[in-house]
Length: 240
Image (tube, rainbow, N blue to C red; front, side, top):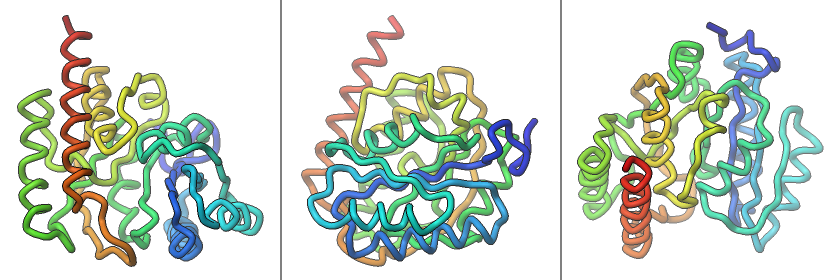
């Protein structure tokens, strides 16, 4: 098995950061993430995916890529978090892929649990010890959603919608139909079906540094459930 520092392409990790209208948070987030990766001494790159932003996000991303080593940018029309992650993964070089939200500061301690499992599992599932900043409706949804995923797909993981790391050679071949939040569950199901090995690690969730979580909106919850059931129908047809 390869270690975090000894991979065929020289990079252990590609961190993909989807960014849609994130001009306020992007620079601080990327600088902090780059510093955290350097501190844990992991050969890594960062790919910022400018997901159709209408503000200065794209220009800021380009400036960061010119200044910081190991930072690249992809510009595209808006495709949602799932589409942005898929787009970034197509040009990634790291042995493992990880999606990191712009609104969460990164520290070496946040990355360490995942890195410890590099080379041991194809999929490393981050499991939040507690949900920070969740209102009662979001807490109810967070309790129900993984149980729906378990009922529909038989997928037994503790946290479906948080930060996961995927071995690139396992992730790239799978066919993903969802571009929004349901992509996270779909990826886990398809990787499980493809025979990928899984590990779960306990991680801490931090307060957002700005804005309001999209998952707090009813329309997003409805869209997530609609996408999940759409994937379930596709998955059932494929299995039959």
